[in-house]
Length: 225
Image 1 (cartoon, rainbow, N blue to C red):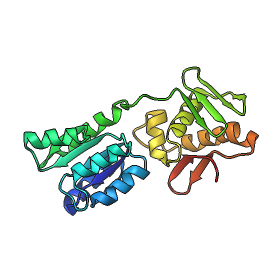
Image 2 (tube, one colour):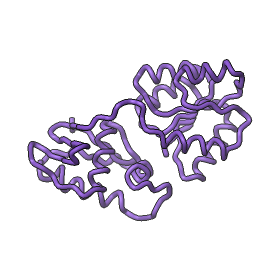
Image 3 (cartoon, rainbow, N blue to C red):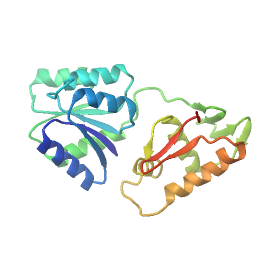
């Protein structure tokens, strides 16, 4: 998973970041609520971990603003504010879970995994379009410029994941988890191989590239400028 950690206490942030890394996840640590809102609205994360008492925008204001900007990423508040009213405020602000400090990292990790498994709240589109490429989830059909494209099941899933994240970069780790359900690095070139196959089928015959490599980061699908 790729996780945004919003925590201004350096020791706590380092502890969480190190634990996530050891569990095979990637994290961005932000110590200011305003900066965190910028990242949350422009990058794709699997889960947000948010402290309530942070500089800039406080945790509640940060999550309210993110939800208003249509960011549906699951979020867990991790805070020392432990009263019943505090929990209610957090959930009503758009939080999906609430864990108080001090905490056990094993419990935080279990809650993160549970949040990541939840289906998105919003209705999922069944027909996806980027430029002249169309993918029909129900009919399991892909076409470009009216030409049907034959994809293997895993290629279809990979394309769907990329199209749903149009304009956002997906890391190799994120693709391994979402397409192959690998929560570890298999030390193979399976992602690169399937990306190459996709390009051969949906890009090369039509002379216009939609699948792009973001160097040292991952892959992104968008219309060339």
